[in-house]
Amino acid sequence: MRTLIRRLTGDTVYLLVAFPLAVITFVLMVAGLSAGAGLLVVWVGVPTLALTALVARGLGDVERLRIRGVLGAALPRPRYPRAPEGAGWFRRMLTPLAGAQPWLDMLHGLVVFPVAVATFCVVVTWWAMVVSGLTYPLYGWIVSDIPGNHGLPELLGLGRGHVVDSVFYFALGALAALTLYPVVRACAVLQASLGKALLTGVAELQERIEDLTEGRNAAAHAEADALRRLERDIHDGPQQRLVHLAMELSRAQRELQRDASAAHATIGQAITATRETLDELRALSRGIAPPILADRGLAPALAALAGRCTIPVELDVQTAERFPALIENTVYFVTAEALTNVAKHSRAQACLITLTRIGDTLMLTIGDDGVGGAHVAKGHGLSGLADRLRAVEGGLSVHSPAGGPTMITAEVPCG
Image (cartoon, one colour):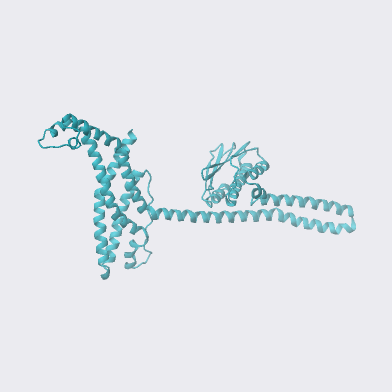
């Protein structure tokens, strides 16, 4: 109840203050735009329009602060263009008019006026009905005795008299009181939504572009890291083994003519080295795109990962549907890297992996009972997972206090 009263009071104040602000803004915008457009032929209109844009920007900042109280969230402020260093006076004068947001600010100053007038009239009327209707029994007997005064009940054929008038107006006031909150709230949200659309539309587009750019850069960074890691692993593992294998086969070829038994032993060692190299290549290929993932989907692929982990892993996959290859590869990669970190650093005795779909998001959680201390700071293993997830507009959160346990949660959009 207290929250409802506070909201009703806030919305009422917002709408009552919006009316004089809208009048002032409308007058300034009409005067500035008309004067600027009329004086363009003599170039005086350019600074006039620039000044009008700056005024609209300031009033827009005020409105963004006021809208926060109605919608309950801070609105992003668009980044207005700035003149480059060393720019001339004319370039600096044109800068306030550059981009779309200054013109949207001025458009808001014009469009909000009729909306503010309408919402102001509705709110004042509703509050007047509530106050006058509920208090009519206190002063109604004075009004009803005025000669020639015809009240609304009499015009509707409901009779004449103080009692009839009091009952009628009290009922009307009670009805207005019951509908006061939704009416005031609807008016406030309508006007605030208009302001949000015009005063933050460019800011939201800028944030979206930044998110896409950050995701693209994160994807490129993650792929570059993966390629460098793969190159290092191949150089340190299979490449060295293949060089050694070639040397062993050359030695076996020389020994074959002198000592067949020694050549046989060397060939046996070469066969063992070949198998080890193949196993290592298979392990490296699993970090890229294992065949089981492409053929059978996430559940069998994650089960294979869990089975190869040196720590007991409990797997709970609650979705059996197939997803786009990029989504499945991302979930697989995150799981593989997380399990690698668990096996190397956590000193855990058990690990739990859960994959479920909630709406249009795949929720992957990986928990262990290890020593904790994991985080996503740059230079640590989990930072690459965060980059990988940003590439698909996902997110990574890590809760790993010192002493454990650790809980890693990855959100991957799949809709």
